[in-house]
Image (tube, rainbow, N blue to C red; front, top):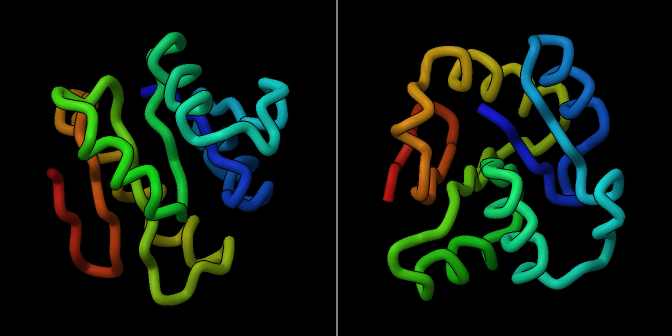
Length: 116
C-alpha cells in the first residue's frame, strides 16, 4: 500500500511508516504544500496512493465524489501526538488488506475503525 501524507501528519509518523517498509510520499516532497484538498486528492489518484490525514474535509470531499477515486484514512485519535499515532496506526496498517482501503474513507479511532 502506498501513502500520501497530508501536511498535518507529523514527520515522526512518516519516518516510522517508512521504517516499517511503507511507501510514503509527503505533500511537501511532492511540492503540494498549501495546495487545496482537491489537488492533493488528484495527486493521490494519479499515483494510486491512500491519503493519510487528520483533516475531516477529506471525508466530505470523498463523500461528494461517487465512487470515491482513492482511499483516505482519517486519523481521529483523541491523542494526536506522533507517538500515539504510530502506536495505533502501524499495527492497523500491517494487518489491513489493501483492497479494504481502496476507494474508501476509513475513520480510524482508538479501538474503532469505520470503513465507509
